[in-house]
Length: 411
Ligand code: AMP
Image (cartoon, rainbow, N blue to C red; front, side, top):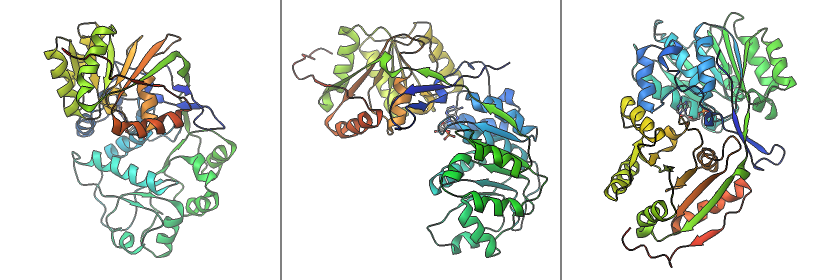
């Protein structure tokens, strides 16, 4: 039986809920593979291209259920990997059906916002390259002209839509949802928060009764529970339990360096501050390779894992780091999310991540299970403003330490 674990940080990011869910911090699932979920090699090829090492907990549990054609309700946060949970099995099934050449949508994904619609469409497109046949997907939302959306609808099989615009399109006879096979409602709780309840009811009335329904919500409130009744479904409920990581267990440090001193300062830290083992984050695969080369030249055993490395190379490098064969593991955000290492003492941000949430994901690799950890940021002038934003979102202030008096000669 797969155990369910989730991670959250105690951070006052949301005034009402001072916890942030970060599902993929948890990876007790290290030996599970995408293959074992029942996905074919066409899908797996895309998974590998995206650099996913192994399924996230929610994927592990949801994908087989959706493949079996069962209704599902997943309680999962943004960032838990829930999009791929439905994208992979939906495409798996669609590729084995005949291509539709009409305006009857096969798969409808209802979302609360334009941003989410675009994001989900991108994930679908990332997976469609290797399929047995072309599958057309499209995202439609309000705030833009309806005409191109109407014109582009012919042959679309997977439609990702916000409720209001979808109703408009149906009113214009641009499409039909009376034959959909699969309905996905993403961020169901947000749908109600944004007042889409009535519009959704109208849409439900236009759909066939016999269809597969997948529902994702960050919370299971009364309105979401009511939706089950409204749709007459009795779904399998998958809820990923939360494991709490205390941000207070993580000592956060920030050093201000000149751009040309970033590398030398990192090596100084590793050598002089006796950083025995550290996970270093960078923002690109190229930066990861360059950093590893530099560290090796300076006799520091380092390995990298990123999406450009083969599955085998990644596994070997991770094992080398875990077994203390390598002192440093350099990773990008995408790959870093899939990593779990017991008692990791130190995380270094050699380059800051784009979003504050990614910052939290990164530093949450250390200071786990009641242990103390250290998160170090090496910052140049042009990163300071972004670091201020991160601190504000995190609700923690990190003192910036100057480094110009440190003699970096020889590092
Ligand atoms: P989502 O919750 O669907 O928005 O996904 C959050 C992020 O996790 C996205 O950037 C995905 O590309 C990434 N992601 C999803 N599944 C995996 C996986 N199995 N391994 C690594 N990254 C993943």
